[in-house]
Amino acid sequence: MPYGSTVNAQITDAVTQTNVKVLGEAPAEALAATMQAMAHATGLAMENATHAQGGMQQINNASTGALVAVIMKAGLAP
Image (cartoon, rainbow, N blue to C red; front, side, top):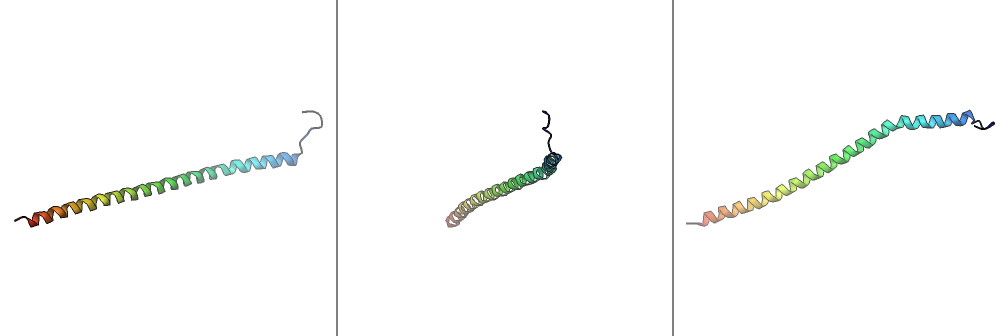
């Protein structure tokens, strides 16, 4: 450094405190991002389960209708 270009101690202290603050908050922010991703994944899993259940209900309704038709047809036979 050239002569007379010293940095004020208050400035270096402020920069150091800012760096410590950022490093101190990093684990909490990482955990929060992880929890948010987990909540999103859980929501998608619930949505997929609901969709699958609806599809199974459609299959159930169709098969019940077909079975009722077979029973009705068998009941009419002499």
